[in-house]
Image (cartoon, rainbow, N blue to C red; front, side, top):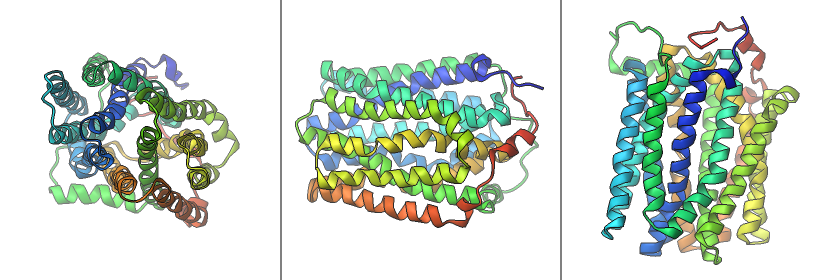
Length: 413
């Protein structure tokens, strides 16, 4: 039976629209957070602490979120998570308007928002799998990366511009975006999970089942480790672009424009992703992205924020193709009853080091030099590229043709 094209899949479109609005608000506030901290404390290290606090819950709450997604209604969990984020960001906007904001309040709000995000994304893969047939999941993953690229393109300059008009504005926009996400979830018709058997196993056994599934799949395990360490580089270098840009005299809008250029290349990469998936085997797609991270080393020769941005643009072009093959294959091949736990285990492994990227960048930029900070990220890129090139699991990466043999499970058709 021929599957409905993604653009005509009502629930997939609703999911993407809701996430487009929500991600746009988050992207706007992501640049507003460091700009706010720099404005009131003038400390890159403290800005790094806030970025660390915002991303840390993705690691701390990955496993509980996955367990919850496999036990309770994924739709309800996502709606509750949106509600928590509305209240957290809205409270920060209110204190800014009242001119009573203090540094540790910003840290607390960032942590609470990140916690809501962890719960939301513990359930989101199940929502995607429910509305998209297995054979279309790589294309759906590429579409999500394209949506994120649009957000990365428009969000940072919007956040910088709104912050320039009033410090509370980007946070107000973020709070409203989570409300719009809730509306889109309520409008979707497809159940976000298959019928479930009553849970009789212990909590420990349910957690172990998710670990065992991921760890016994060499390809999934290696990708989680490789790209988890890659998540140390990406957030760290992008945070460094913000701080170095400000140190070199750029305005908030100009810094946002640099981040938007990265987003433009992500968007371009998502557009060419179908062609890349047809022309290259999975191994070549993965190794290509790993080697591109070394481009940030050009900053060591020419320490300009513009050169640093240019050095990471090839990575932006490669990321959508990698995401499409890795995320699409993983979600399609994981049983629905295990999806939340398996995704949370993968998320915990792959994001375990991610909060250290901005924190490391902030500390190094405050204590040593911009060159030394970028050198750490470039050296990490070399190690990952060599590892990925020599890895037996990557060398024998599966073909996406396997997905065409899977039945359509619960998706609209």
